Amino acid sequence: MSNPKILVIEDHPLFATGIKELVEFVATNTEIICAGSVNEAISLFDHSSPNLVITDLRLPDFTGQGVLDKLAQHWPQVPIVIMSGDSQLLASVSVSNHTLSWQISKAEGFEQTSAVLLEALTRAGVNVQWRPNSSATRQNNAQGAQTNTLSNGRSGRNSGIQLTHKQQQVMHYLASGLSNKEIARKLDLSPETIKTHLREIFTRMNVKNRTQAVSLYRKIPRLNGNGSNPDARM
Image (cartoon, rainbow, N blue to C red; front, side, top):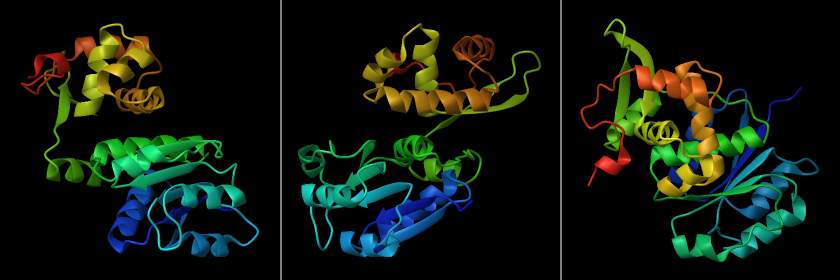
């Protein structure tokens, strides 16, 4: 069986390389194909189709809604992630012709961009994995993000469980009894993104459900002096 094909449509080499490396970071056994325009992307696939399209909205041959309409003519059933550094352009387009869709602002940081890509790849049927101790940690440190390490309450030694700052926020609200939708509203994220965060949290904590995660979270003291309570910060 052939590997899943991820199509990245981006005419800026720096962004194209960055997205390609990020997909390679979270996805396994994928073939990533880059194109600099919509027409080039379509010609690369001939009579086949990618498993997921990741596209900029400002390309040499099409812009904004034109990008989405052209892609929908060829691959209406293919999930699509749209990117732009222009928030107004992102807000102006409609993805109603696509089965599944996500938006990424180029102003977003590594963590949020990774979470959206992780969700999109998963929904597209791509096998994904998360490696928090490798380049993700370096990326987060470079952007000033904090990774909070939890300590084993019984021995005082590092338990090996690491949650990002955003995951700490999700766990704080989860332990407070909030639903996914309520957490999403608190953090200004989509409920699907909260589900993605929870799946990764369960994996890192080696638990199977919300109850087990909350129970373990309450037993392990936080080493970071700032804590994870988002309501405690100014």
